[in-house]
Image: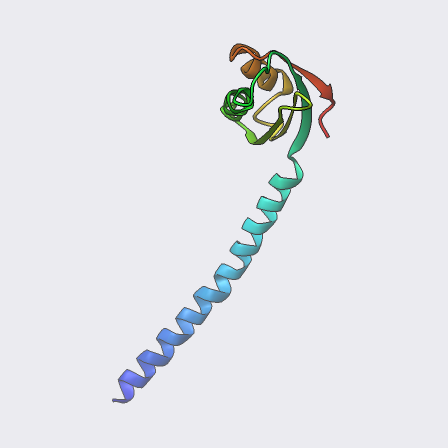
Amino acid sequence: MKKLVVIAALAALAGLGAIVALAPLQSAAQAQAQAAQAQLRTASFAVDNMTCATCPITVRTAMSRVDGVRSVSVDFASKRATVTYDPARATTEAIAAASTNAGYPAHLVTPAT
């Protein structure tokens, strides 16, 4: 019986040690995620040839397929697209080209911030 108590106590301590050891890893992962989020940029594009309410869907889909693009919002009324992207993986030129290749020429309006 005494051996069982000792084994249970050691197991509990080992489990506690694992939890304490994981805490720094979680903090490091959170810091890395925050750093990646901080590196994201947003750019606005003027988009030509949008003539109907479904055109923004095509533009959004084309721009979203560029590797590194995180989000795309297209406003039909103003004929603008706002894109959030990772500049290490995507460029404004590649994003504009994706829309242009889908039949909707896009031109950078505001520099990436």
